[in-house]
Length: 331
Image: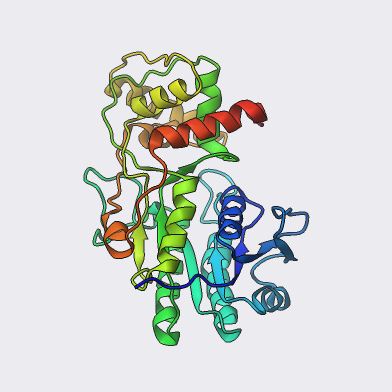
């Protein structure tokens, strides 16, 4: 059965990459949107701003959820203070306790829809076969563990209080406004960098931000949307295929050369020693993300909500490339 979208929705992390797109999609759906941001955060046009120093700010949280019918919780602590550090307490403070506090305040205010943005990292880092929602979670870092615990809190509170609470596990997200590794990859392809990955035969799932926002709306519209789902574009890519796809979208020639993966791994492990001393990301870990497989099966989301990604991978990469060109590949 089709549910009606909540008429007034709070989006946390509204000034971020995904948050901006989520706000825009809700506005297109006729939803009134309030955006929760940190001081100096800027919300998209037509979004009511609500400022908080963090999810620990009880007064700001109460103000943020007042009058809302739904919450889409995108805000999260993502980055370790530096590679190799002990677990950053921010993961627990924000992703676990902050989620608990926000959902409790939201329920007390009468919110009946609560979407939690999780991550494939709640299950792990690498898998030979596509993961389903039945795959036993084995998160490997503090971020993944905190997301898995956040999922548990949301599911428990939702069951106790009768809240419609979709939990969506996202792989790497790309699209206009993106940041971090995928933006660096676009810059490298645009700069005609040479990639020694032609021998890599992995499979990885990705998610265009337009498909992400459509998936959130699909779970809110469906009676069966109050569950845990993997989301992806529905077409997995190897790293060479991704590089070639980006090159095509940018009207570049992909510069891929064939180097044995074993040789790449040996060089990466040798480079780990100085990286540890300088407290930088380990090359072996970065290479594992490039050469390993991490595929998810979005079939459950399709079966239970009828969701179909509105954008193909080619369309998503093309839209991202158009933004990249017009924005100048921002630093």
